[in-house]
Length: 408
Image (cartoon, rainbow, N blue to C red; front, side, top):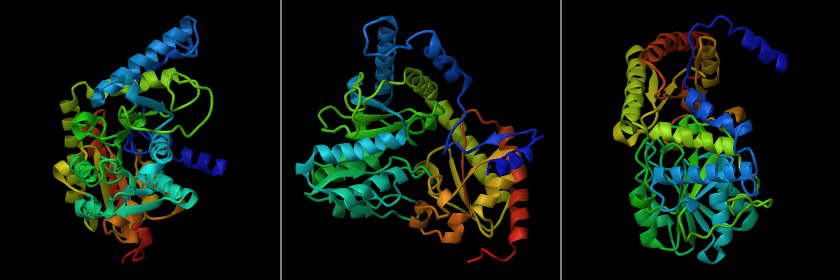
């Protein structure tokens, strides 16, 4: 396996232009973020933030300041409403399991949308199989927008938790979150409402006070921060039980020694995302539209997945190419220095079609033939032009190899 990968890497030698569009799965860390983090590894605040010495006090101060800044960025009332976790997956696990275990008298029903991230879907399934909860999945329309009438029907007096992502990570669908929360609270005020806001944070306005959301998941790498760190906002007064045991640090719901450098990096990435927020968003939207418009101007037999306009996150482009297998296309594009992902990032290794694309009505061949591209404020017009030069050639090459197979 390692030798095969080494051979593939050799084929990439000589690439003169690289465009990284796989920001769904990981991201490059900007130099400003790296520079902010480095001193915290060996020059300051490298101590345990719970201990009474200078490096410990420095770490404690850095973590508290970061908590305050992240809190401010989403409109939280107090810094104690932020719990840092090792990432989005852990935050979603804490939200769903922690709320379910801490509120057994509220009921044993969980409601999610049918296009939730895999880490939400799987936790809901585990709660059902192992702990006797029931799970209802609310359908979406062909654009991936949650059916609010079906949501209203799903919530009842036994519903302990509803979890609907603010923006779908695969097709960029911006959900009517405020309307959804109002519906849920009107049906059952005791129901806890959680949202995975990882793909909303830094891309669309997101304020927990305006929304009146109970819990919200944030991810560092989704805003070009370091991997290995995320956060869960928990509104003051919401009862959540910790799901791991260990040494208690500065936060009661996630044990262990806090990773100060990553927390600082996450905070710096947040500052960069929200400095000139409107300009950053407009730049991403302009580059994304240039990419999508260019693809549709140059190519045929393709489908755009998800909504258009204001109902779509500004960075997201998801396109299905008929008669073209997505994994083959990612490899072909990689050999030209263009890096994208195929289908669902979380399910592609299982060779299963994206559950999101299936939910919006795509055939399996269309789901398998999709690629997801996410632009950032660091991309240039030249980057997008290069992608538009390479992509049609790569698709045509694969279609010639495939021939008539793959046609529905």
